[in-house]
Length: 266
Image (tube, rainbow, N blue to C red; front, side, top):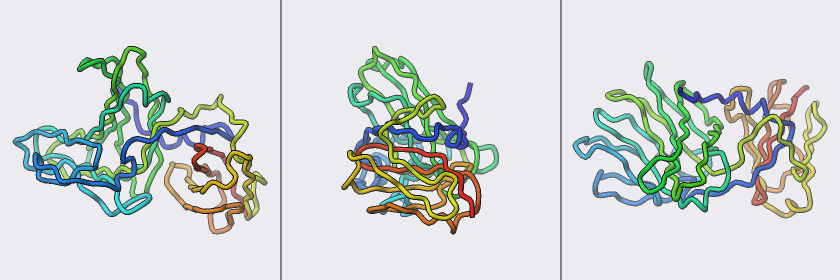
């Protein structure tokens, strides 16, 4: 059974949730190197997975980035298989969700997907798949809950299209390993956002562990789409440019990721 991409899950979160994300090598896709097999550039730390008789490029370095200069653009092949993947030692992957941002331009009934497999040797012990089946013109947050396996010795993270012969596209950026966000989870050491609801100014109070850290804040809409971003030493956000409604406010620093559900009023 397919696990669909449900960006609305963001607004089903607890009011405050904190996760300590684990980075994947080149998770922002800023570093690239030439790959002679596909005659294309590949993100450093990643591998091309494609049919060698297929002349299509499996991946393209895109300047349309969520953050930084580049993102990874995964393309549909004319025929055969195509995609990109990275391998991780099991010990580096202790948390239970893959999170990140995607954009998509899908044709007809096309889909694209992310797959995370727990492997013992070449045997698949468990796998989790998240399908992207809609066009998302703006950067949209996703999370994939993982089916972990205690017997695995490596993990494969891969992005693939699932159709052939069409011009569908999937952009990926800023992925990491984190803790799955559920309704029952609350964080005691996350930043405090107040007042909630807010009438125009949203204040942020940081716990002592966060003070002095560089902070990045994303404002996400009802469908998970990125509405606004802020970076630096942030103590107050002016919410008046945003339409009244319910938003997810994602606060990130070296301490982790905190997610709050906030009502913006005017």
